[in-house]
Length: 305
Ligand code: SF4
Ligand code: SF4
Image (cartoon, rainbow, N blue to C red):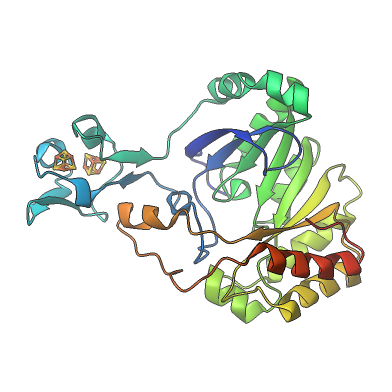
């Protein structure tokens, strides 16, 4: 467990795909997985990072002059940032007149975060929504902070949903069981080798935790299984049949199985982080394919899409 104050990259209001009703989703920074298709790459690392935009840079060199680490220099009239040296302090973001530099990761005291999240209370009440804690992987950051946050939200009458990849110690789930109304639990692939190839870890811990969560006598929360469907990785009948078969055989108490078509909307962020997007060959399944694959789960007895 990490004992530093968790960093938040975004507070997204009016989310309608992150659990029941209208929700405000908090994205925490840091994840034990590195999915090739991740559309929030700025949430993968646990430290602050700087997003830049060399293509639009005019080469004014303001950022070069103010960087206390000497992490920026000009190359061919454009800024270039050494990510090994940059500590994400954010100083340069205040000096770029074109606002091309942005810090990913901000600390919030719990009381200030709750105050921010309460601004949308009226929408939660009207729609049966609440707050979704997402990431990155929210169950891999400081659990003292996350437990206190969830407890306070519930105390103030706001429901809490947790979006998780499942690759965390089960104890972290247990700590949140008294407060969570729903878990959005991701399954990426049944084939452990494929899982490792595209996410960096095998799926053993993820599946073990899902079995424990499903059968945990202290669980009041619903479980929504979420599967990103990606052509080139898992958008095959055989792969979905394997997942459906496993869920059924293990008697996983899933309220729904949601198939989420892959999209590449986050791909441009990789360049802004000085990284390379490796999902160029992936394709988005069309509506008919998603419908066909959903039918596999319905036949296995699950409510799907
Ligand atoms: S975030 Fe801080 S260390 Fe990084 S480039 Fe900007 S000023 Fe330099
Ligand atoms: S301050 Fe902005 S425009 Fe000027 S060199 Fe830095 S990134 Fe480029």
